[in-house]
Image (cartoon, rainbow, N blue to C red; front, side):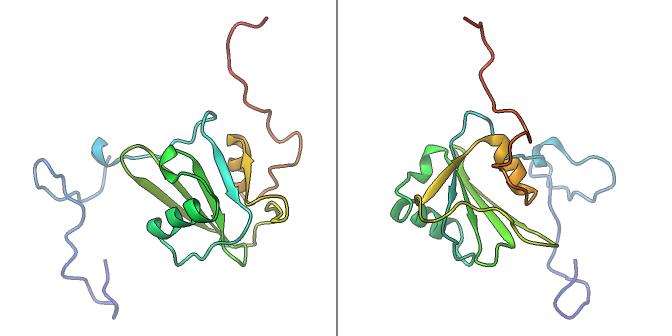
Length: 156
């Protein structure tokens, strides 16, 4: 890691193995306790905010926005998606029961071509496969992209 001037940063020790206190030096597989992933399942409620959000906000600011502006409980496990004014980035906020996840994706090229209209409501609900299309800067309302999720079970 480098400091602001380009020299080696003397304060950075790197991630450590908390049980043994040894520093993880890379090269090979990382210990299993470092591998974390946010899983968005088809059963989760996914809401897309129609108005752009101030991306200087962090977790506390976005949870306040969920409560006050969107009228939703951020502790309910709902996945909230926000965009910036220029449509060049997306932020996703979700509570997993232990804490909040805040994910930020900035597109290296291009912008979002689709986002729901603000005149209908403060939020629009999306399905899981539609969210994955949105993450790729695609149009989730385009038909034929992916089939809707439906529960597997005995058919009547």
